[in-house]
Length: 316
Image (cartoon, rainbow, N blue to C red):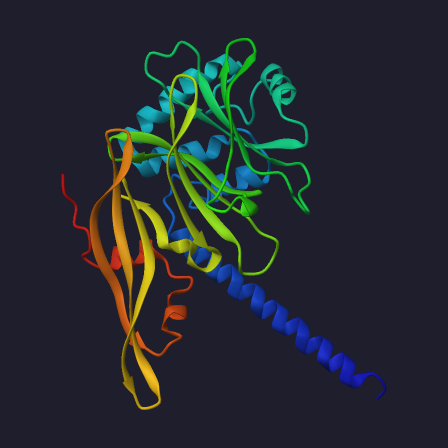
C-alpha cells in the first residue's frame, strides 16, 4: 500500500511525542511539589493567576490562609487593608480598580507588560507599597530583561525604584519570570523572585533572588543560580533557604576506569543583621560511580530529600 511506511513512522512519532509530553508533565509536577506553597511555582492557583495575567487572584489568597496559619493570616489581612486604596478588597475583587489599572499602564516602560503585582508591607508607612513584575510584551521571543517596579499608591502611582534582574553573566539576563512572592526567611519578610534566561535547550540558567523592601528602594540581599536541570537544588523550608551544589572527587583507578565519589554539598541559610548568611552544612545523597556520576543528580528535588531524611533538625 503506497505511503504505508510513512504513515507508520508518523504514528510512531506521534506516540513518542505523547509519551514525552507525559514525562514532562510528571517531572514538572514533581518539581512544583518541591516548591513552597506560598510561591507561584509551588501553588497551582497562583500559577493560573499569572498565566491569566490577573494582577490579583482572590482564590489563591484563600489557599494561603489555609496553608500558612496565623502568621500568613495576619500578613494577608494587612495586605487587604493596604489594598483599600485600589477601591476594592483583594479578597473580593478579581483585579485592581479601573483607575489604578489605567494609571499603572501609564508608568510602564515601553515594551513591557505586567504579569504580577505583590503588596509589600512596611511598618510606619503611610502609603501602600507594591512590587510590579514586568516582562517583554513579545511572548514568543522575549528580549527585554525582567524588571521590578517598586511602587507607592495614593491617588496615583509613584515609581520609587526600578530594578532589572541580572545573573552572574550579563549575557544571560533573565527574560522569563517563574515566580514572585513575599516569603519568610528567619525573622524577615523578603521578596523572592525566580526567573530564567533561555533560548531553548537545556542550557538555561535559573535565578533565585531575595530582595528587601526599604522605604524608597528594593535592595538585593542575596542571589542564587542553577542550571535548568539543577533548579530543584534550592528550596525554602521552615523559614530557611536551602541550597545545594553537586560536589565530586575522583578516587582510585579500578580496572580501566576511575572511581568517583559525589554528594550534594547543602547549606542552610537564614537572615541575620540585614544579610542572608550560612547557618549549617550537610552532605546529602552520597553516591559512588563512574565519571558520569554527577549526571545522576539532575532534576533532583532538594525539598523532597530534606523531607525524607533527618537533616537540619529544627532549632531555635
